[in-house]
Image (cartoon, rainbow, N blue to C red; front, side, top):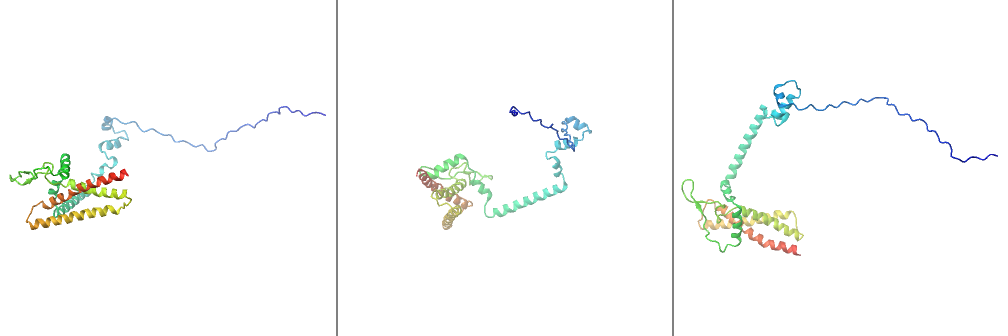
Length: 250
């Protein structure tokens, strides 16, 4: 009786590997690099380069292929019609707006400087030691007096810059305080602005009535009253700022 041998078995022979052979050969397209830039002299003198017209057009016009759009007669006619319509529309708006508000006089009230704004704020908050209160006048183009200097050159001259900025600041500050109280709503902006304009309107109406009863008339009387009525928002803001800091302390 023979014993079975338990030695290392003979290694198994793996079958030979066969690499797959492609049945359909795909061709890869050859990529060509762009042509080198052509010197300016060759662009002006040579005509053999097929890229010369594009380079010349791109160098001659900043808009590239759409540069000839401005030279089109139809485009020029459209631009002329648009400019004419815009000119007539602006003139019509200016004429209708000048019926109620004098634009040239309104620009006078916004002619301010940084130094004037700072000094005017101190004057509005602490008016006790200021003098004199008379406004400065200059000689007009016809040699006549009575032309008041702009606010930039006269501290006593009323302006519209500080009242407008004070009104906007008051609206934003009041809504901020309402938000700190937890009572902010988007409609609060409109209601606060509406009440502020209503108070200014009632105040100006009362002042105009007093000027009518006292026979006081002036060309810029309405704008002066609007400016003087808007200065009160500076004092209102100074009373609201301590309330704002009190919320931050809590």
